[in-house]
Length: 337
Image (tube, rainbow, N blue to C red; front, side, top):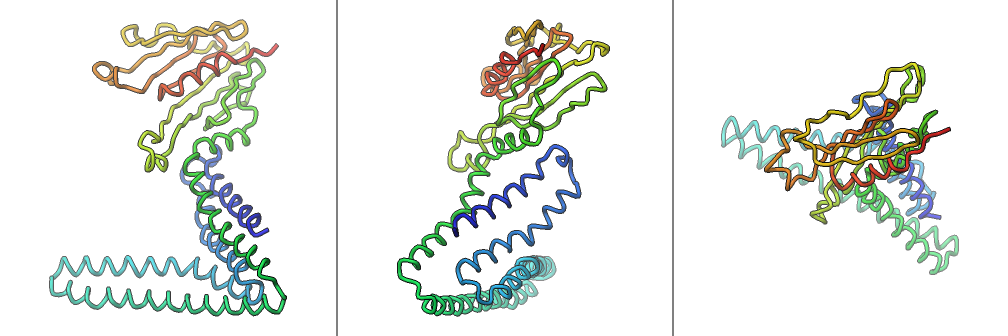
């Protein structure tokens, strides 16, 4: 039960933070993002209050929870204010006089260390008192050694859940973001004429399904690796690509721009042709001028423009590793009857 409660709280916090990445609030800054940022002064101390309830029982928990939330909301801000004020005072003193610098350093730094150690000492003493009270409660409730052992094992396991959650989200952020964007926009690849099977782990950044203007379009991002993974695995760094498609859904609209004649032939690296229903699509791979030889051999970047049809067009730019998936997406695009 302890593990389940902590896991649910951790997942709620994860989804709450990921809501910043929703397409409608992705512009910066927004009131939604500000609300999420400021609410962390309550949500994160709330996790500590939850652990206090699980570890030390219900007795006096309301008072402990209020103290924890107040300390988390204002105590951290006070600590940071004092710390940076101390640093600023020492830096200012060093710019004025070495004598003043030495005097302030000798007075302020030991004073700060002494104050911090006193706070830690009081917290440790309070923890001993709470542990003693919990032991007495266990004796009154006639808990067996097996019951206490199971509870302690659950608490130890639960303590790892927030850290593991942060680690997994940090490693698979782009993929989780992609799934999240598809949940919010479940029919992003479907129009009245075509069904584009956008991969579930590809992020949908923007889309337009308003048929009044005669077009349906979407663009997004494909990612692999993460900066966090790069710390442990040098080849696991974040690699990002951009994709898009445009569909004409109204016969009254002007034809879409095609890839015919673009880019210049001397920049073309390859061509691929697809048949989507009754539409013939040609994709031209090219490199812009700033990536031309001698950088072509070592470049992992590729630019693709797909067209040739008055009703369907697509584009890609980014890492070559994502290009086969982009082509499979076009191959599996279906024309709806």
